[in-house]
Amino acid sequence: MQYIENTEPHQASRTPKMIPISRLLNEPSHTSNTRTLPSNTTTTPWACGTTTDTVTTVPPPDIIDIYARWTRYDGTYPKSPEDFIRKTHVYSVTIPPSTPLAVGKRVRVFAISPAHWCSPGAEADLFGAYDAHIIGRIRRVLGWKKHLPVIALEVENECRVSAVRKARLEIPYVPGLTVAPLENLREGKGPKEAVLEDLNLDARVQPPLQLWACMAGECVLRSISIPGDVMYDEFWLSGSIYADERKRTRKAKPHERVRLDNMAAVGWKREEYGEH
Image (cartoon, rainbow, N blue to C red; front, side, top):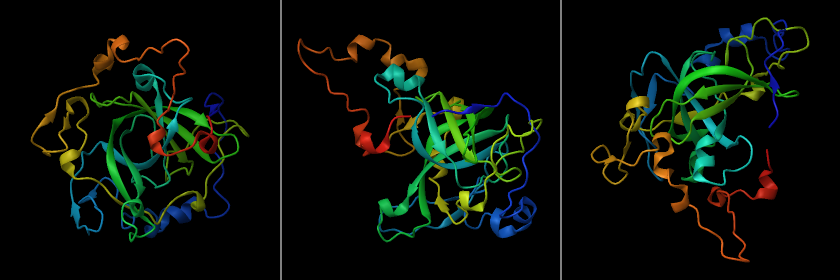
């Protein structure tokens, strides 16, 4: 996916014509946490055929929770464990964060999926979330798409057990709401501004239990069979578990065609998803 790099300064973009930013920021229904659940609330994780109760928690003061959908890898699918570690994971953010994002802000990514995938009776605007073990500071603005009101932010991951080194957040550009305004931009060279229709203001998200929260540099993956009791002790530290690549790569026999599934379990077909 090609981006226009953030190298040319131009004046700050104009306010969207459809609904002014000033009106958006003054309407509590658009910025309140009654529909989306930002960093100051969490809920018991949903399960098929069950109901949940909201539980208020106190998050770390310097972290902004991001609820986003994983969309793709940067470039082609990884062909080896080492390639997987080097890949940047791309997330689409349409649920406005509790605070506008900016370079230097520390964020934690929760990956979301529609709740009705698990429970057919779930409401259409309900999403389940899991901790993606991506937590870190926004290091830079990568750029923006030429004809779309979206900018890309790079996050350097601090979680020591995650295989993801970097993540890209693609978020609609609504200055003062989703991100801080880009400054010193030259006329005609900035990103297009988004409007309300580009955001999901009706979404409700049920995050996982705080027990499973990523602890960044001190993080360990707990056993899924005995939650909170047994620690998972195989780490992704510097790719050390794949240090001997020869033991992980099957050699093809003469005249044998090796099948590359490319994460087929995700459920997408190559011709439908396309290459980026």
